Length: 338
Image 1: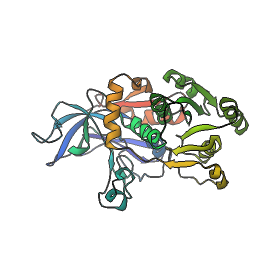
Image 2: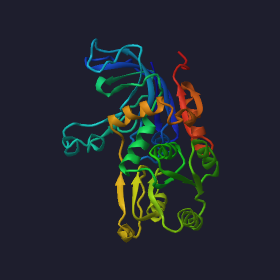
Image 3: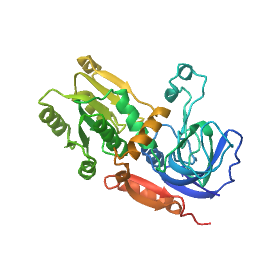
Image 4: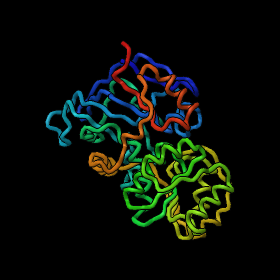
């Protein structure tokens, strides 16, 4: 079968690999669609913190069940369209023993610390396979939804999401679903225009520190936002979220980066509540599958570009050079040359 590799920064190839062999307790899956995550793009650029080369990328995907144990306890059957939890936890570290499996101290996310889903077939432990109820990949929404839940966003909150990429837009959608008034900020005017299609209450162009500060003051009458959500992973955007948060507010970090920030930590004495958010939980997947299928979140609008699997190198190159014009880039695995 065929598999996609990021061999080195800026280098993508398609290679022939052996078909996986399903073991008891596993499911054999045929990949249908896969989305390029910000971490995949960072791996391609050489900026993502948790990636070793060469590796098969990909942890956003939908798949068809080909084989599964008969009469399994999870109700997973051949022919089902499923999504999967791609965050492999060790089960025995301090975090896992305390039930915080998404923050496993030895976490291995598919496409990051272990090979990912951008190949024709994969096997997965059956307990990580969830009935998608006919829906495509939902994993990126789970990342955003988990972060919004960490910040305890509630009705009446005024929320600022910094970063209008896929994760940021999905965080805005999740915050809106919880009844918040939501603004989104980005350095790209094009991305802010796209974000307007998802029902945000306003946008803030972050084209200079002065304009960002002025915009925050105007929107909040000088008080700051109840909740700020960092969805980029840069020192400057982390600082934006600290600065824009009100006294006693909540700030959550979803973005992942590898640069340090030197900042005045006394700002946290605004009595800020600063949360880290990592991966997602099974309950996030199951709740969101129902939310999206009920029509409460326009997930289909996120996909802006679809490429054939064979065009992997072009897809990554296009995305890397046109991030302001592309939101979610998806591979169609039915279009693979033999």
